[in-house]
Length: 91
Image (cartoon, rainbow, N blue to C red; front, side):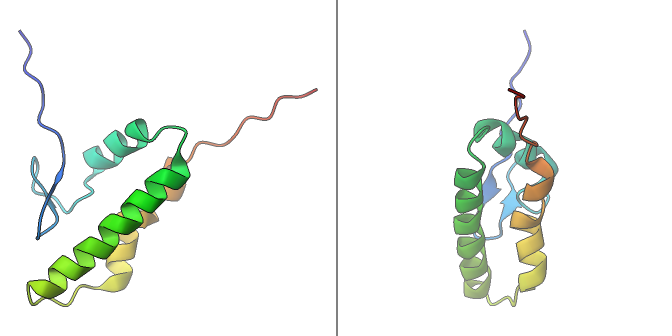
């Protein structure tokens, strides 16, 4: 029997992946999120924006000074790569 892999979810307040300990969203979490929100790219962007806001708040609460440009790239910078081009049907 094949064992199920653990999901790549954020561990708060550090915002590291619970499975691989990489900064969340790790590459596997990104793939999982694209699959989960397939066809709903705006909802994915809103969800990740909310996560970004919470992560910045959490990191400040821990006494850190997060690099905001780095945080933006980490949470939202990869979204344009995840979007699939729309196919237009010819009439």
